[in-house]
Image (cartoon, rainbow, N blue to C red; front, top):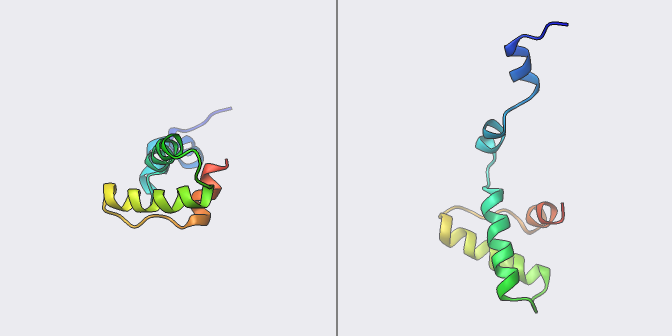
Length: 76
């Protein structure tokens, strides 16, 4: 069986290619969420997500993802 390099690249995208096309920096979002969770252990997840959205917009100067998108990524 013979595979061409172009076929491999087309079917199995590299990590940089996938993350480069992502609208949001999910690694940064996860890091911010973990930091907020350590600092505010008594807050509910929805309250933490509201704080996360504000912090994300302040730090990265970009619009934050929606609550449901953040919740989906955090719970996986």
